[in-house]
Image 1 (tube, rainbow, N blue to C red):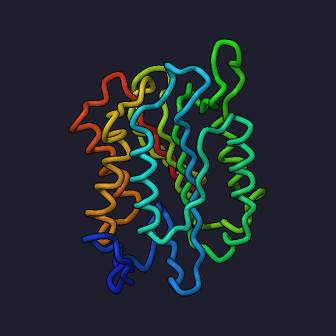
Image 2 (tube, helix red, strand yellow):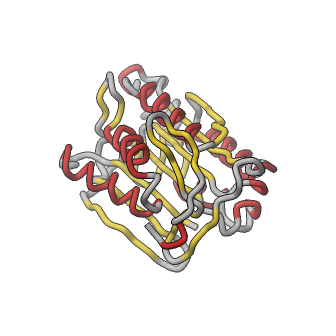
Image 3 (cartoon, helix red, strand yellow):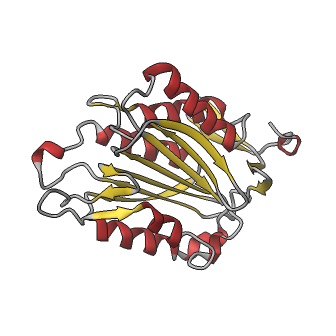
Length: 245
């Protein structure tokens, strides 16, 4: 924990507490606004039902339930969408980026759960007969960048994508002057329990509940990555986390 987090404010979080007077992101410190004046927003998109029955994401409802509970505990007003096409996902993110409440916020979360390919998130109509029904990951960054979302300038924006993808295995952390991007991935298939939901969301909720009162956000995502390494070995599976500022 950084020296600037010695006198935290407290936010109830179930049996735990979320407390910190700053959000730490390399190489900057972002101060948290007082709870009485801030208006935090989070966007949660969950595609469960697809045109093709065999693409139904069993257990994804549990992920939505767990993620919404966590975001509300962190004092975010959660805007939810379910079963969207690629175009509708793009529209939802664009509208979300334009919300006036961001001007009185200190951060935001965008959570998208669906099927997907490398750098693409599938809409509910995606399939052999409709291969272009997807949302480009780059569009998310574009809608939330400085030019299109000035209200979130210099404020942490956490983008969490839980989706099946394609490609080679890798896990890395890339830091540059414009974006801190955490990838926990094997670029293949997402690991999800039909009753408990995905391991990514499960470990994310567990780590935040147990450590958000004492660790900065970069370390929280490192802990999530380490939990995924340890418990499911990530062979042939993908869980992607993007954090940028």
